[in-house]
Image 1 (cartoon, rainbow, N blue to C red):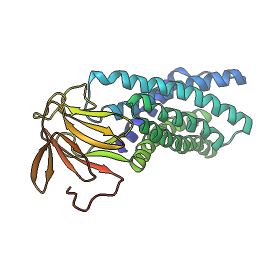
Image 2 (tube, rainbow, N blue to C red):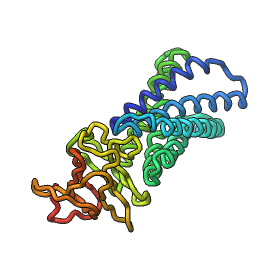
Image 3 (cartoon, one colour):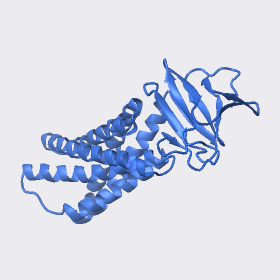
Image 4 (cartoon, rainbow, N blue to C red):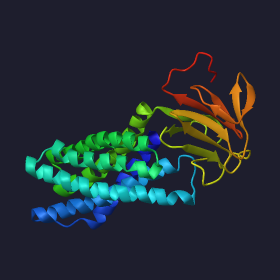
Length: 299
């Protein structure tokens, strides 16, 4: 969650820098206003989309293989921002102004950006969680963005200062809210995940989706979860596979061990239960699920 929030805030700040440099022209009519909002939304959406994509894709390390997915997240953000801001501006004009009509546009942007994480991550559940989180984050951040500008004007700040300061702080808050809420909703609603308790990824979690056939682990850049800094991990060491709504861990190019009470038992095709601790190479992860945990499970 915090990683998403920080990356989102950076994306909002970079987006503000771009629009400050490129969109300083005034508009005189509705078509020009909608065009300016479309450009603003596209630039901010691109930056926040790239940031959210980078936060997710680099959680287990950096590799060139991930650049296309980060780029796809940016492209989705561009389209989401363009569409969301044009719709939001239309609602704003129809409603005669106000904080919440303006926030609707950013909420639509957050919703579309979040749903767009489905093809980026290839996890349907991720799109659902991120869509809901993006909607909430866009609504909260967008309302804060608009309210901040109004407050600055209300205390006597000039229009230029209100737009500059309000835009910078507001977009940072917007990006942080979208990133934070995407991570928060996923954490609350996800049904199964891996929590690493030892090794280079210690402290990190990875969401599982029963609609995705397999998630691979290993040192190779081609793996879904990279164990690059684990010297005992094979290129494609193991996989967590979804079978009939349940998850099974299986060996690929390396051994897999079930750890219980300090002892390790080698397994080849093991159905996971909540609380199971699995070792691949030097790395260990705990399988977590919202299913009821057996009393004998050992963490």
